[in-house]
Length: 606
Image (cartoon, rainbow, N blue to C red):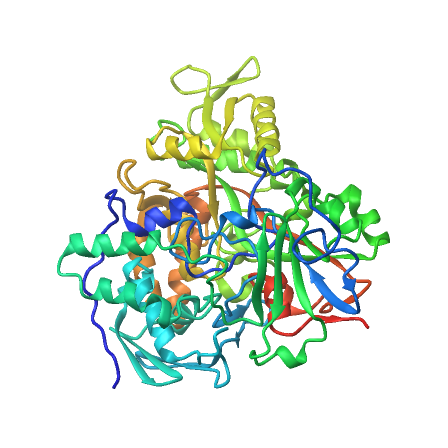
């Protein structure tokens, strides 16, 4: 009998914070995988001891072959024993290779979709039909069914997944087919990006049914909130987890994790290696680990240009995921000076990503400041009418001075003075995680050398979050860019501009030259929220027009000040493993190190 549901309300968690905001605050997302070697941090108590060299989760992985076995060796930077597998639990960063297959992924390089767990997915009017693979099982040998997918999507509703604004019903058609019925025709890309792309099926019905039932049966908001909190408290531990990917957890201890190949997976027969070892290695030691042939892959964010020759000589190849994320300076738009468009434009000409980055290998040239991840090969497709007219914020002190002078600023003894005859000063907090301290040092020097008195304090990430919650900042770390315009503009104009929605009114209007295409046009006030709301149901020329208008407002209004668009350098041992060619579109998938083996695209060189 088909199951159907109707939305019943959204609610909030016990603290009164919107659930979606709460999950963003915690770094929890149920629509992404955690990649070994990417998560974790620079904990002071991580230590440097990786155990014996036996490669079974109790050491550094040896040479990649043990007793005739071929072992693919990744790393994890977070403590293996501290995480668990419930995607809705704030401590869900399990830090090992994904044990859940994703439904599918969008390939930016091919501008096409690839099914993984989903065998087929197609839109027909206001209905999306998803068919799962016939021969897919959970690790307890139960079939993966449409009921599991139903459970996943309904749980996402209670955590305010944005796509639920347009979902009317879910219907289980048969064991392998689920229909998603929308309230109106939704842009196909929006639907697939929200429900297929990089979405792991990590909520088996036989584990999560009781939590979903409690949510569906809640008589009022208090009962629903209690059910949500119960789900968030559930810890799905390493000795209990039941996945569905080619990799099944065999052992986890303080030294690392070991995964075995699950014989019931459709690609298991295509794999010519035996297991995966994921030793716990701290971030500061990971480059040494791959150069010393202790692991076969690391996130190479700390490999700089000075190490490239050494890497090449050690049978290690570098590949780049261009990523779709950017680092910005997020400013208080109510600030007397930073709230002025020309002041933000001046800063954009000074904050040069190649100069600021601690690792220039991570910087992707972003000439087309638009809130989108665009370069020479795709900008004309996305912005056919305005791409040549976008202002390019490349380091230029003369342009910076021009825009400050437009606002009545002037220089006195090398210091920029405000129209109120006071020194122009910038102050703000910056989180300490990763390479940010280096960025802050260079940013501060660039602005001070130009004559803007700047003091950016590097503080512990938790303290930084508290300051944002209290709206205590003028200038701080922000983010922008995404893989597609429908989510990119929400990030660029909303999530990245309003780190905490409690900080005054949302910035929804910008005064920019209008219509788009000429920076000398008269200024008009443009409401970006209305246009963002229209995007998910727009198609064809209407969608192009909305995208170009929003890109133009981002370029001229600068809701955030772009600093750099980042790439992820990845280092792989190539002496015993056959990886995809350098020009393979797989390198621009969201998480290539996880998805390439899951798709059977790596093999041992025997």
